Length: 316
Image 1 (cartoon, helix red, strand yellow):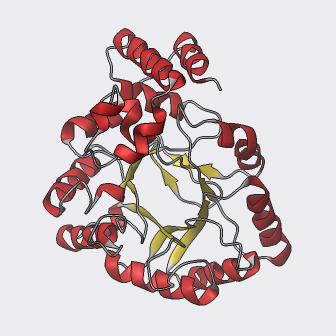
Image 2 (cartoon, rainbow, N blue to C red):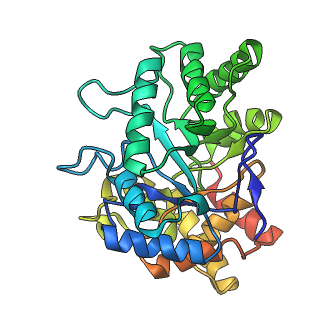
């Protein structure tokens, strides 16, 4: 399977990244191990997580996903077969948040301990911290890179102006540059990336790894109404998608899925992989059936008619 470079970092990945937010949330440890084994067996190696996963669950403190990954690596002895990205910056409670130098250094040590590894392939600022100078943040990342604890850095949820500012500063001060952007981008949520962020990513040769690639499950077609989502783990995430445009998108996905003997999830990911500037979308699965559907997207090539139909249905 062809790998795609993650910016100028020297890292590369297959055209799909597994989203580890499900580990310790909608997947228990044994199920997570099975999914990771299947992911590796299918020829993939990139897994994305964050220190804050899954603090939103009642009784969780954050770090649950990283701990499961760490126990998996220790049990299997295969850390070197994976490209692991994790993130820092979201609130972990008790004032532990942001992108100050001291906090990044401590948070990185915490993530390394939970992951039971001595290095992080790709370390991302989970969101911009307007209270911390960009230079301070990049200096902290520089120290981690010099120590060999981080191999490359990226940004998630950055606005276009701040991303450009960070890249310009890195060049001017000879500091590490963000090599990857992790934006919120999918067939429904198109505007911010396509109208603001894509140009800078292409101009600066950043890798792009969109999250919520399936719109929290909406684009899989398993929710056909607000009532379908009631009581589900992702209910609050998908409620807003049930508008006229969302229903049009589901119709276009159904049409393409039938035409290509595929599934809406596979089609939605294939569309995203075909978008200019996108390196590798992040997608999750909680069963082998779902995993097979997202993997199938790497082999599905939509033709121009199908892409145009999906573009038209999802236009603002």
